[in-house]
Structure formats: C-alpha cells, structure tokens
Length: 154
Image 1 (cartoon, helix red, strand yellow):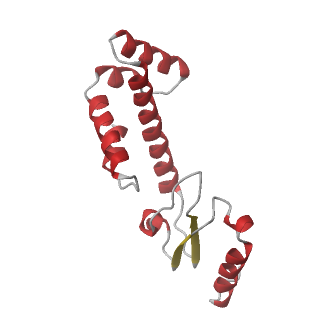
Image 2 (cartoon, rainbow, N blue to C red):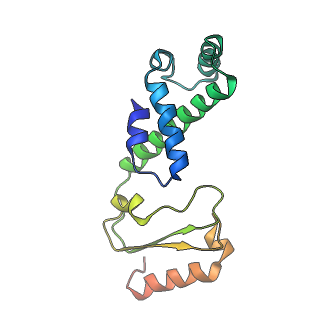
Image 3 (spheres, rainbow, N blue to C red):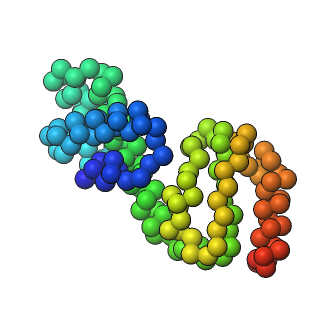
C-alpha cells in the first residue's frame, strides 16, 4: 500500500512531524475502512469514509487528519511515479532551493540525485522563496554563466 511505502521513504520532515505521520499511518494501515474504500480520493469516497469514521466514534479532526495523510501519501506516490518516468538529466546542471520557499522546504541534494547522471551542483539559497530567478536574478545569472564557462551552451 502507498501509505507504508510513503512513510518508509526518505523525507526532510521535522522529527515531530514524522512521529505524528507514523502514528497516523499505523492507525490507517490497521483500519479496514481504508483498505476497502480509499482506492480513490473522489469527493464522494472521502465523504463516505469520513462518515464511516465519525459514525464509528472518531473525532472529525482525527478523520480529517487521516484524509490529509492519505492525500499527502497519494501526492508523493504520483510525484515519484512521474519522476521515475522522466529520462535522466545528463548535462551539467545547477539546482536551487530557497530557504524561505513557502511551497516546499529546501531538499537535500541527494533527494533528486537519481535524476541527474551529469555533473550537478545543488545550492540552498538563504532569504529566497520559490521563484529564485525573479527574487535574486544575479544569483541565477551567475549560475547560468558558470555553466556556460564549463562548456554548456545549448
């Protein structure tokens, strides 16, 4: 099941987040409603599962947490399948993560390393969000020039 694979994968979560998710996943893996109903996250399915949980005595907040965890695991599985289907990047590359990215936290260089077979430098930039070329164009331009100097001019 996706939940077990997701919780066992490498994530850059805070320890408290990991412990919370692990407990929720354990509860979900033991729940027959999940195995029977959550093959899809269609709104009607989610409503049915939420009703079954709350009718069984689960609090609405716990039921909502369960759905959030299932959605997160499903989204992760989709991203992993999509990445696996992509050809590896064989040219010299520089990748960036902004420390202040509100979309996702900075990733360790190893997280996407399998997608790169050519030389790659991963840089985490402080004070920058999700749109690095717009927020710090000089840093982005320096990286482009660095690649050009290395002989990468496509």
